[in-house]
Amino acid sequence: MDQPIEEKRTQAVLEYPAIYKRVIEQWKLEGEDTFWLIYSANYLFRFGGVRWAVDPVILSSRIQADFPPHLEEDFEKVDFIVLTHRHSDHLDKKLLKEISDINIPWVVPEFMLDEVNKIIHLPDHRIIVPTPGKHLEISGIKILALEGSHWEKTGDLNAQGIALHGVPAYSYLFEAQNKRWFIPGDTRTYDPKQIPQLGHLDGLIAHVWLGRNGALKDPPPLLDKFCEYFLRFYSSKIVLTHLDEWGRTESDLWTNHHADVITQRIKQKSTSVTVISAFTGDQVSMQ
Image (cartoon, rainbow, N blue to C red; front, side, top):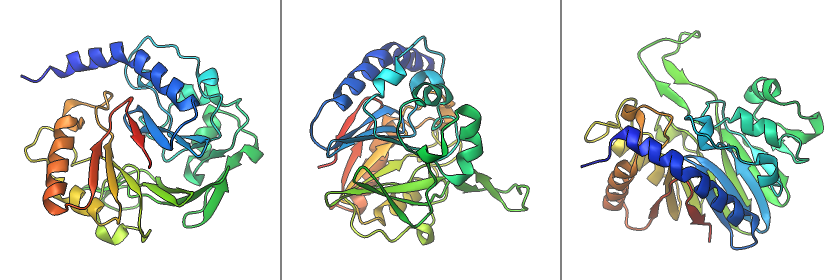
């Protein structure tokens, strides 16, 4: 019998301090090109000796947890920060405040500038506002920002009279030393027409979302659309993340069960792509 959701949350809170400590220690070491999940869809990268974070968030910003890390010390080796959008599972205000004095550049989408400026006060020379479709480079890492697909088609009209729900978001392609990894970010509309033409990718990080309130349905409503969408990217590896995000309700909580279902369905459709499920604390090789 599956463990009740509240028991799983309690267990996650108990286990997280040791997981966090291990991840930070490993990230600071020298070693192969890799990334870690500091939380469900929040990443610490190490590539060619360069370290960066994408949407750094820790568990205690999502659910109550008595966990006081030394954030500025923990992030002392980071070379830059990248943000994608303003939802709370991707924007940890306390963490951003505590690391804001580290003298590094921040890649901040224009639509997030007001939000970020309310949290921290970065000097202009440390803020890089990416232009979608135009490359920038930091510490030898080429970065391409693209418009994300964090818009869900609904039956309700928004203020502009459009039946969409969501927020602006960016996806990012990271390139260095002939390696190319793409983070599409939170995706709500699996429209093949919106897939960017990126050529061959070494890896793609796919945030699991199979339909609003769909986690308890069998099968989840958008299972096939999710698999078909991400298979259209020419990627050698698909890494499934945004699993066990404990700040969500059970009907929107994607778990190892959903990751297994996705993996099985993708393997039915393609035998040429490697599929990996990654959870908080996991390390994924970029080799």
